[in-house]
Length: 522
Image (spheres, helix red, strand yellow):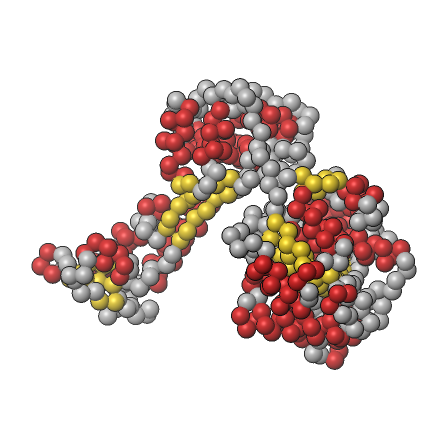
């Protein structure tokens, strides 16, 4: 079933509040009762530790060149037309890919974060170059090093590489702390040499349908340290983290992985995490790696990605200066790529759907199940809930485009998109929309229209609506007590700031400390 982000957030906040209750295990019945009341455990949206949920809409991405165009321009290898799962790229992806191909140090900063396609913008040029080297008969060696701040990100990328490179003949691997030493220690199913990409995905689908927790490894994956150290076994694409890269260049048994490596790409994902002392140390590591591989700065295509690297008010200067200092390159050869947005198109004549539905919550729950229906059933499943919301049935073929077309003529969806141009509290939306469309609009119906907008097809990549949910939660920021009740009774506050805001400076505030074993307060 598709995730309801609002309901999911409520559960997370509820768990967090109960955790806060264990942080202060007060044995005193009165103080404990006050803490439970303040935390509002039964109504998480009213707790003072939380702000939100807020909802906004991300603007759609402008479409760029087709994969065929990039092949014709010599930017992509011909085989990329088979490997890239869609015919067109986004405009910022195209700009980044062309910059990398031209040999520029490329900073890719898209504020949307997850889902903006930053990974493809650096991965596709790397794969294309590996295909060229494969055609030229180049021996296996490290061509690209991709550095992640967390192993979880590297593992996610590893899964993506498996799907893309299975059967393509391009060796790749991930070397982190948990990488096994020997082939015998690998947990998973290894596909035989000669496996095609289609056969890999067919077997992967079989595993998923049976619900087995099996890792499927293509023959191209170097999954053990011994395999990557062996002569001729080096991966062309190496995934790692900063600490592990430092070790690889230090340990004698590992440093041979980079022996004779024509290092052409050096990528740092989430580069904004490399600040201060860690950033300076990593900058030195970059220079050590290049020196070991015998590469000059202009011979390596440096790439850094981040959702927050570029300051929209400071121009490109700060970001380019970061690249100059971090990578040790000429600032004139640095290209900053930001996301390029498009505007939503709406029908000139729009209607307000009848409603609201008698049970909007049931419609929302059914809709979230419908979007996960099998491919041959999804159009009919969504149509049923769309009709319940006052819409019309969808065409079975190209149902996403049909849904987007229908929503473009929906006045309620139009007003919802306008209201969410900037983040807005979800609790405000029913009143705002009721005023605009002239009828009640319950929260569950709003979430249903957002779910439909997210499921609709816009162009070949993006849905009509791309909702984002924001919630801010803080911990108990230093609980205090005051003697401000009748007869000087003790009153508990979650923070000194809360007490000051209500009582002013006329009361003494006493920090509250509890024994984590017995709950005695001090």
